[in-house]
Image 1 (cartoon, rainbow, N blue to C red):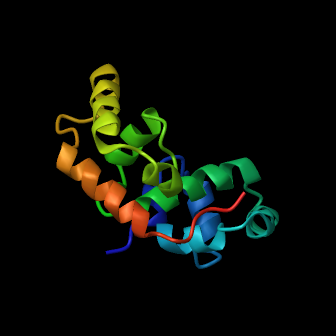
Image 2 (cartoon, rainbow, N blue to C red):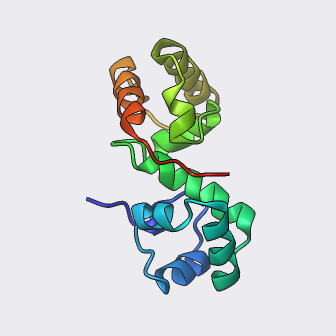
Length: 135
C-alpha cells in the first residue's frame, strides 16, 4: 500500500493540499515529481512551497520507498545521518544499527527500535534502487 503524502515528516496540511491539487497524493508520486532540480523548481513555482522544503520532503519520500522505513524508523535514520536511499546504500549494517540504537536511546522515538536484521534488509533493498533524488 502506498504511503499517503500527508504521512511524510514535515508535511503540513497546507502543503499537502497544494501537492494533492497537482495529483501528488502519495510519497511515491511526490518522489517522482520532485526527482530533478528542474522538476523541484517547477513544483515550487506551481505550489508556492520553498525548494528547500521540497528537497527535504523528496528525501523523506525517497526513504519511504523502502519497506518499513516510513514513520519513526525514517526519523531514526535521519537522526543517524541517513536521509536518502543513496546514503543508506553505503552504510554498514552493524555500524548503522548501533547508531540507530544510540539515537533512539537519546531521543526515545520508539519502544521497538529496529533489529540488526531490519537494518540489513533496508540496506539490501536500498541497493536495488536505481533512481534517486538528483541535485
